[in-house]
Image (cartoon, rainbow, N blue to C red; front, side, top):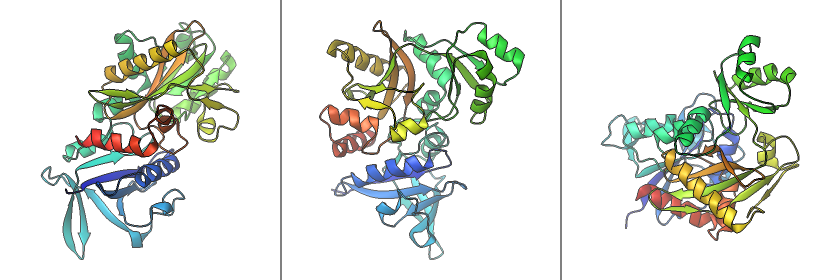
Length: 348
């Protein structure tokens, strides 16, 4: 049987470039090469140029991959009949058809629907969430409004576009401290600040607006964060619920990738019946936002046992230490099987 040709996209023009290298390396290292013909496609950090990487996969995590002798420039073919890539070899234009593409691109310019849209326009099957769900989940305000329409509890929030005193005053007229200020469309806690009093608000908004043209002021939810890994489209499989134990104000970028002072408990330290309710809520949110393939749904659990929506990561971290594979591993699904399930689902 012919091996299916799958491109794995990594890197990208995003602050989360380095994390993408780690995640993609883990995924590619666990692919069954007897079933899949792997085509590693690296997106250069500054120019966004696409390269077919033909070197050692172990060079990727340390960012030693982008070298002329092992990289061939490629671009998506506008001919949907090719459903793949175009490159030059010995002065001749060559076509590389794909059975599918798996973007492992965290944050903007990768997780936000832009790459998914380009792939779909070129007739390339996207493994994972498509254009609409990727864009919707990246927009924190629209994701919350959509979830609310389906009866999911979401924190109160106000959209803001500047740090001017009058705009801040109007925004806070309907909210209470503490609040979180965050970019509307950004990944992995970039630009997010927990604000306890008015004197901190303007600077927090300015920080958020570095990453996006709009910011969200959102009331803090009492309790702690829980998450749930979801795999599938028609039939959904969930991992064990995990729990984030914080020592600081929130799970920021540094804590996500170093766990210097925080801890992740999987399974979460909650009653089994409540964990099952968290899984069901995660699946409801996943459906409401049109997700497919895989995603990690993050929620808050309050002391009275209520579940509040936080966000959906349509391309969660995929290192062997990341939350998404960790939750599935705790449910009896090892990393290699997780990769197999995702590929089979995406190419079915």
